[in-house]
Length: 196
Image 1 (cartoon, rainbow, N blue to C red):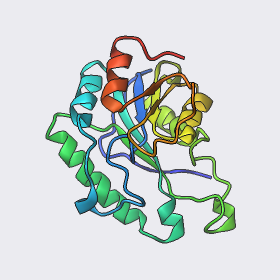
Image 2 (image 1 turned 180 degrees about the vertical axis):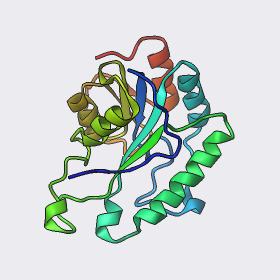
Image 3 (image 1 turned 135 degrees about the vertical axis):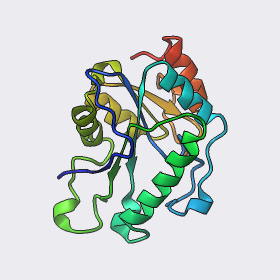
């Protein structure tokens, strides 16, 4: 199964470090099945945190499960419109997103041949595809999200995974690399304190 990708500002560099970012609950305030521009809201501090990562030489790549597409709640075009809005807002802070990779599937809804995909996190398909297309060194990169599926996708791709408590807040007790929000993760990454 090939994941959908939307590369809005592609960069071609050799063996770059990246931070892979879940969207809902990590970049923006969690709102169930978000697709309307007017409902999009950054978590406080996120744009400036992303600028710090970019200034430190990291590519910024969004990897997001969007099962609302398979469920018929909204369309891929709706998601692309939202992502263009997000990227435009980030550009106001000097932030460029290198790529946005979407899994539109659901494990029990939609065409049967699309239910067992390789791109739905915690499988690593989105990250592996991004690494191939954007020349990313996964072993030197990070995955940040608010669910264990994000954490597992990063681990399965060979990245250092970090969890944030700014989204669903259903996090395992005692798990390493749990932070309050994305700005806190960024500080740890830049200080070398977010490790396996």
